[in-house]
Length: 162
Image 1 (cartoon, one colour):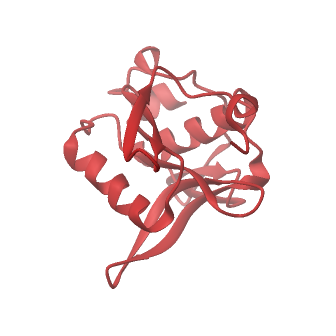
Image 2: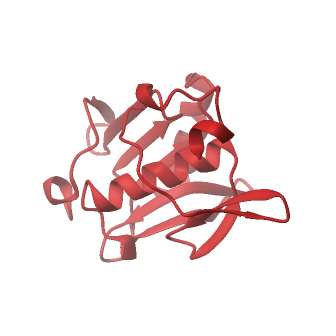
């Protein structure tokens, strides 16, 4: 179904493997089930990337679903913003922020600036940006005020509760 509904997306070029999603058509509109929000949402290209990535994190990389949330609201300089996905530590503090874009949107400095602004408020250890094709993950070192781009997304068991 994804190929028919989004023929311009080449799933073979995704940086992570596609998984099966619950997709329904309601009143002529395609919707996808969000495993974290426990509801169906309109299936846009960005939402497709989000749902594929979240499911991959849970079922392939071992991230606990109970520590993940989509569309987390934050206050930033007197404005209200939403982080696409946040993974929390068991103590409730932010661990990873993920920002999604549709495959046709390039991952550029503006996208990185967006997630960095969110992280000014959340202070997560890892930042991830993806449009499905490109996938960037960096680890923040707050003591040295540096960051390192990683070659892949670590399995949860490799980085949990660091």
